[in-house]
Image 1 (tube, one colour):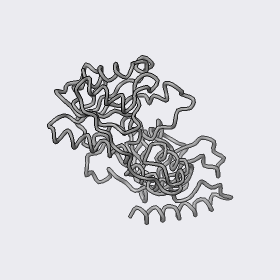
Image 2 (tube, one colour):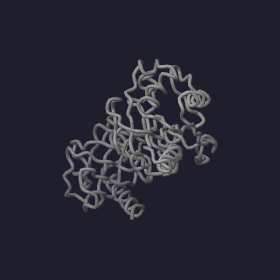
Image 3 (cartoon, helix red, strand yellow):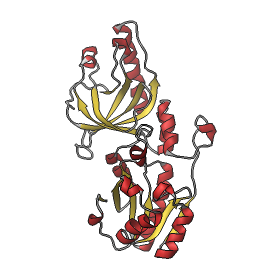
Length: 319
């Protein structure tokens, strides 16, 4: 998949295009992307997504912006997995936000991407003050010669989210992750939630307790509620199929209250391994199931006993 960060890099004869933030690239997004790819293949055109970096909320209301489900690297990986031919990453600025709906469509969809079909959800908004709607896009399509295909909302979340009436959405996934329900979040995302980070030095307490952990720094992706999770550690630097590329793990999220910790950390213990040197390596941690909330233990021995139980449960889940 080609990734363009500037209009001067764009090279396409004709395309089927969609636009959006695509945070999390969840199952609702996938329904739109599948339609884009299907139409593009049928018409022998390029399947392209236009997305934005940073997220518009970080520009307009940084103090209220939601925690992002995915960083840009993972978003691009997930968009590539959806079968797109290219993604145009548009730097989101106040100047971009000031473009009228027609200016945005003309500059990006028509002049740059030569769109013949634009695929969007019914709730699409674009242009200055989000003044452009589906009706606006249809009108502009008539002027500039592209067809507009609107994809209906798909899916419903579990009854624990928004009374069971929420569609598959980034906000629904965030709500579930805030509760620590990574299994239900996976139902919205269509995959395990992932965190990406570089392994940094910690206080080596895990090794002293017999459970050496990889501490993540510079984390991309929404960190879920404190607790202990079963999951996987993926090592993108290793080749596909390498023996240690994907490793089962027990993952701790929290402040280590037994030791009066104050810094919130994400630490992954690779099951039954004490021979790995992951320092300074970028890894992806995928969270499969929450084992328990974070607890404060009365003694180190009690903590170690619980850690053995956590590892046993994680091993059974991941087996």
